[in-house]
Amino acid sequence: MSLTPTEISVAVKSNPSTGIYYAKPNQSIYDVCLQLYGTLDFLTELLRKNNFNELNNVDATGLTFIFDTNKVKNKKINDHNLMNNIYYATLFNHAPSTYYELRDDSGRELRDDTSFELL
Image 1 (cartoon, rainbow, N blue to C red):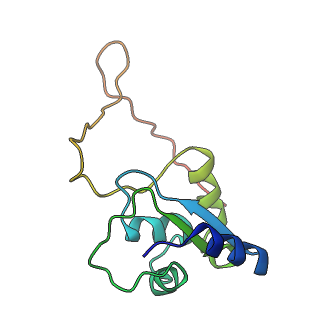
Image 2: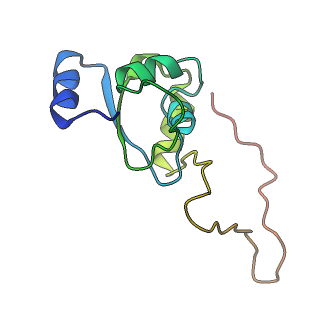
C-alpha cells in the first residue's frame, strides 16, 4: 500500500517537481490530500502515485507520500500551514483527544479579531 524507499527515491530523481510528505498522527488520506494540494481534486492521483488501490483503509498515520508540487492549489496557504506546523488531522479514533481553548490569565477566551488574509 505504501511506497518503498526505492520507489520514493526513483520518483524524486525522475521528476524535480516531486515532493515527499510524511503523514502526521491522526491524518487520513483525505487530510493528506488537503494538506498537500489544498483540494481533494487530486485524491485519485495521490492514491495512484502512492500505490493505494482502495479507500477502505483511510488511516495515513506514519506513511510517506510523494506528490506533484506543481499541482498545489494555493501555495501561500500551503507554505503558511507548513511554516506554522498546521496539519489537517481528522482521525481521532486512535487515542483520546484533548481539545484546547486559549485563555489569557483572567480566564477570558483569546480570539484574534483581526482577519488574516493571504494575498
